[in-house]
Length: 179
Image (cartoon, rainbow, N blue to C red; front, side, top):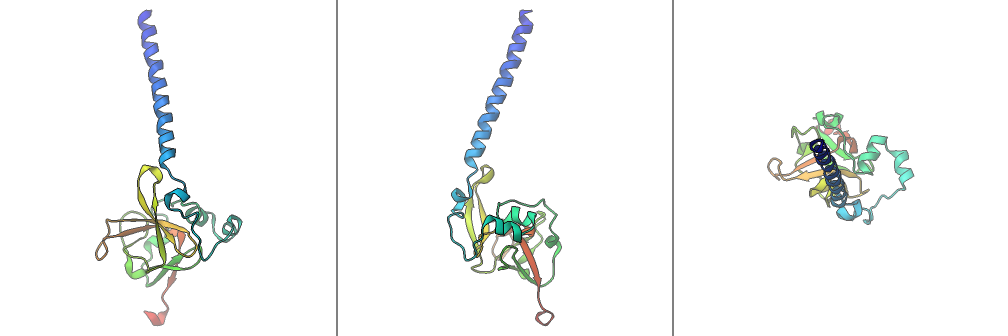
């Protein structure tokens, strides 16, 4: 009988330790996950286009709102822009600022539209410490909309991979006379 009690006590201790470790891990995760203002001071930054939350919700689809305004992400492989190969520009879905030229798009195999270079001066970058890692977030310089992240594993000539949420973009094909 004492053997069973000891085994039960050990089981209870394991549950207690696992619970405490889980709560500690959750606390550490929440501590490491910075708020947008801590991540790069985006919330404090002023942009040319500023709207209320209600105005953004009225203008954007729910998916665009989640990505651009709440720094969400789409499931890999779900953006129609992943397979967009025509000449043109990819613009911010929040304010229509051209952010990437089609000539800089490449197939990264990640499931998100990827570019090796933005249109100069049209994106901003901030440090993103979400999910316990340090990444560089990319946002629209005009409205502050979250576009995705940039990594240093891209092709030449820049060696960068701008991994962009396709639902945060709109595509404008080049005019027939431009092709």
